[in-house]
Length: 194
Image 1 (tube, helix red, strand yellow):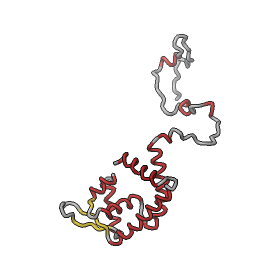
Image 2 (tube, helix red, strand yellow):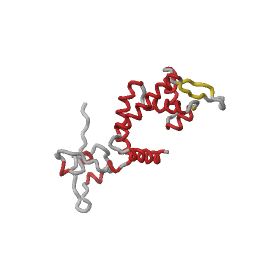
Image 3 (tube, rainbow, N blue to C red):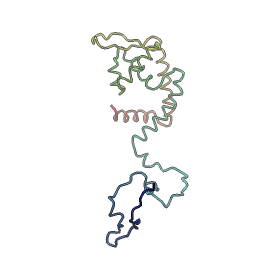
Image 4 (cartoon, helix red, strand yellow):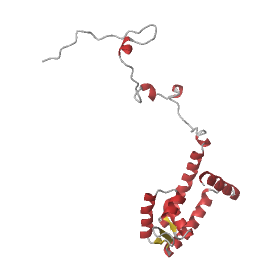
């Protein structure tokens, strides 16, 4: 059994003189195509479609504070990860242990506020540091619901070495800065987030 064919023949679009649209355009509601249009995939500057980029123009990005801060941070973090491997410390673990070392009895809530960490993310981190014998949890003297975090003797010894290494590596990666420039940069960065 064959499907019946319509007696109407396919219509050809007829361009109207006034609007420039075709009869087919006016017969159907216009639909907007998003993402699949061949024009959306064309380069903005078609004259340079086949250009070979010899040097990258990043002048605009270099005017952005976030871009520069991120690039500087990545330069430091790569060296940090390499030199902290001997202590088996990631940046966030280093920060937590440093605050515990310099603030014995600090609570998890205080750590979250100081480091801008979400409480669920800190729970596992504190458990891992406790299992490694680097910190110990003790009841808080004034808040019965809270636990104070204290460095163990091993944790304190590890952090003293790790902090010395961190100070040395920061001098190495910022060696093109003078001591005064380094101090000024720290102050300016802290003005943004403190």
